[in-house]
Amino acid sequence: MPAFSNVSPIFQADKVRPDDFSYDLPHEKVAEYPVEPRDISKMMVLHRDTCQVEHKIFRDITEYFQEGDVLVLNNTQVFPAKFTAYKDDTNDPIEVFLLRELGENIWEVSVEPARKVRIGNSLIFGENLICDVIDNTVSSGRVISFHKNGYDLKQILGKLGEAPLPPYIRRRPEPKDKITYQTVFAENRGSVVAPCAGMHFTENLLEEVESLGVKIAKITVHLGVHSYEPITISDLSKYSLNAEYYHISEQAAETINAARRTDSRVIVAGASTLRALETSQFEGIKVVPREGWTDLFVYPPHHFHIADGLITNFHQPQSSTMILQYSFYGQDNLMEVYHEALEDDYRFLGYGDAMLII
Image (tube, rainbow, N blue to C red; front, side):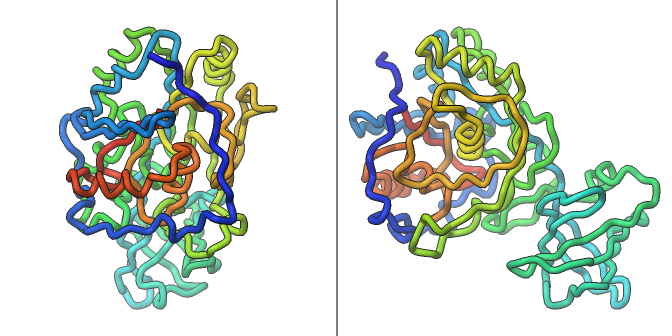
């Protein structure tokens, strides 16, 4: 099996526009539920050097690993971030979606209906959990501050909240979503979006991958909702992502760097995982153990320094993740690939099927 190549193609950035990544996504192609077991989802394999396309199921991914490879996974844990709260003065129901923690007991949120929620309002969540609305944000968001009553805030939020299913899933969250909208290796709570590329793995499949002599490195990237949003400005150089927190341990960095030193391959699960590695790399030769925030927006031309392969899903039209896929794939026929997936009944978005770019 030939080694993966992490040599990035040369694009002309001024010729790449967000509307180049527009396509019609019928709702019936959007996965409302995951498949069971997770590893029988479909997987389209894209070969960067030949443009060959293969159709597999996800558990066939073991065919593309070899001894010495490193698989990088994101061990973030999704917390139940959707709530129904009530205004203290009118008792009107308000849907609250926690987006990210800004400080102790302070969160950025989206609210619906936004027109009813103003600075100075209080919202009641239940179990004596109350917050005050203290500021507005862009896109009709709010900043809320929970009252300090000596409780474990995250424990109560975990009890009261629902799985934060994305808006393209039209059904209501169900109790089992708290389990299925997670990876089997989730450890560190902090995401409001599941790292969907990692959700295809089962514990048995991970054991099989390790039995091949593949090392697994886990990093943490807490995902936000930016991947839902289509990019509407024409100049990609002027687009910015919301920052995401990441942490790369010394052990994970050394595992990845050892692979680079020995010309072994690094296969990364997820666009945000790849962005964190690109943010932390030093002089294109190694990953630096660190924690911080990354707002890196990957668009062509971009030279990828660490990853040789990318596991990902089929994403929203004109999304930052789709543009990252195009940058990594290095071929101009990505849209043809998406249309082929639609014709072949692949399931799209977070609970959908997988893509392996090698």
